[in-house]
Image 1 (cartoon, helix red, strand yellow):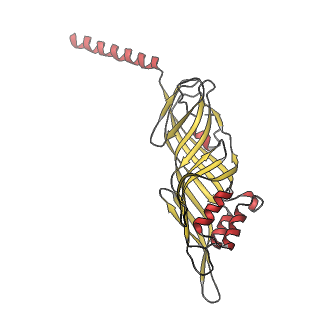
Image 2: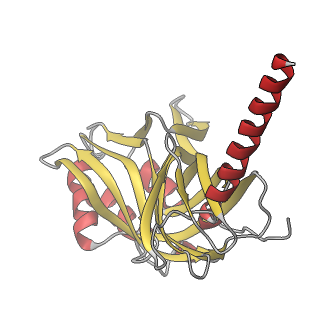
Image 3: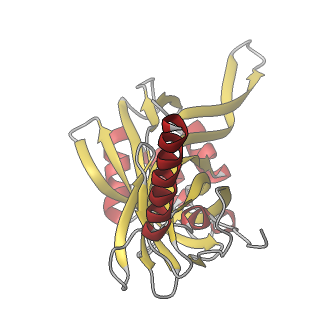
Length: 289
């Protein structure tokens, strides 16, 4: 198949689900399937799988170390961290993060598919789980507090990233909170349905770069973790587009796979029915003779 699928939205390139000729928004989940027409016949899209991995920027890693933050996963996400330890002349061992990633399984993709043109435009990708950051009051360090970020949803139309957040110090729980706005997305966001009518697995990778928070979101993080002046200054550096190559809080790398199965047209089912009836009549004649 000579079709280039270069981003997470390509995983939904067979989202042929609208019953009308014009574009209509549809959502595919991991446990469901959707069907609809296209210029070259009907398709069924199913078995959505994959993950969205938030890789923390080096500036964020530095800020976490400054505030003495600990990390824990929020199921069903997988938290991948690396650390390094140093020992002072007095024998005190200090452990610091060197990298951190939170890989969350993809739960759904939403997009507009136009049956007239056979082109899909993906609008949203949602994941489940995430990570919790915790600060413990210890002398002049930050805390106590915590902030849990989970169930991230990326809106490709507005470049906004939403999440369910819960935190200490009066933050509470806020669902679908606008946490970040991203700067760039690598890869196209529209694709054409291919012509080959054979079942196929589509796998794709997409990278979103430059996650930056609004003033309100920065205040929420500050409040939840109860940051001191040093911690706040470090966090402000993370959110500065002129620092760290414009990485902000980090990048989101999504890897998604779906299975697309061609659906027989009604006329095909009719011919199959005629064929089965014919076989039945032949069997009856043979038994009668």
